[in-house]
Amino acid sequence: MSPEFMAEYHRLLAATKPVAAPGPRERPAGSFGALADTYFGSPEVRSKRPSTQKMYRLVIEPLTEKAGSAP
Image (cartoon, rainbow, N blue to C red; front, side):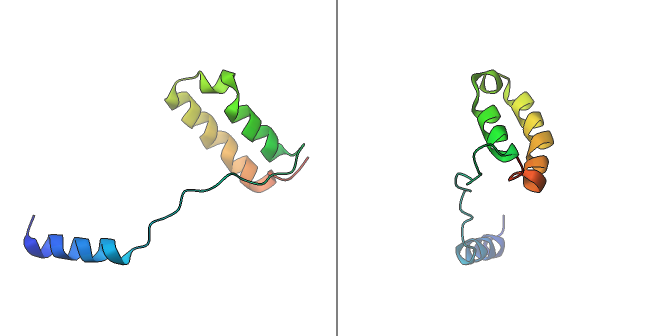
């Protein structure tokens, strides 16, 4: 890599604020989102392979974004 590239890379890196990891979501008890959180934290799901857990999240998380606070 050229020195110019690295200089620009470091300049942009310093100018970019790090993205904070999302904290725990506040979802009402008895809601679909709370159910999903409990499900993802369950031993049944946590014992699955990481690729399986990821696939489950890819399916369920969009639903929680739309209806996370619904009973």
